[in-house]
Length: 305
Image 1: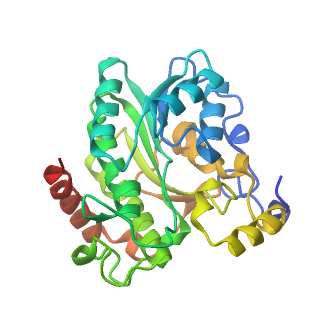
Image 2 (image 1 turned 45 degrees about the horizontal axis):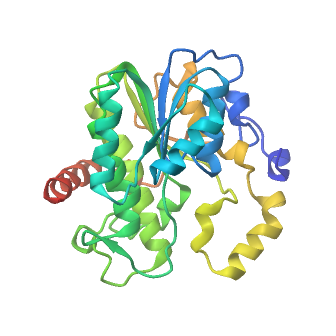
């Protein structure tokens, strides 16, 4: 248990800041269920995949290369399957969709865990700022391509962040998705995380009533997601992590809770934190903005090679 958990109680769900992925899945038998987890080879993605496998699920281990995906799957479970999914490359994401669909097996959940954070300088892919493209567009292609094999009660969990509050005042700068105008690392990351949140919100509206899509703030965790932070910031995080940051098992709890717990089956388009329903920024609840982002993302995807 992290030090911070000592000062935070549990919420209405019975879980809270200090709950772990094992806690929220305790007693559940996931035998026969299949889940795709992106970024399953490290951090909270690896912990989420591990706990799903521990509970008997077949886990499709998404990673940036087939070698990493296969290595993760081999170490995880005889039932695990490695799938390459480089979210910044549409061809790789489409190949992942094709591979998963070719298995001709239903999916009980898609956990959009992978992402990049706070790139110190502007990087682009296909003309778009890389954090927006990787974190949002890549997952948009993946999820929309796999809606057909999703079971009637299937769940999509999209990793967002409290950092969505750092998004531009307009929320999504549709006239600056390249990032070429006044790029700053945290502002761009905030926009990408807001896009994740809005995607889950709009997706929930478009799904059949028994399916769910929700966004998750995992908490602040010391993982390799922060590898692009300045060295001094990484040093501070390393020293203070035991006091102020969640552990990886705690960080994986909310997305695991959202993906498998019976109590979350009725949650649709919510923003979840510490294994409870939370409240996002006003922009994160802007349905018109969510619909506009969906339409714009469809245009982006249609024009990609």
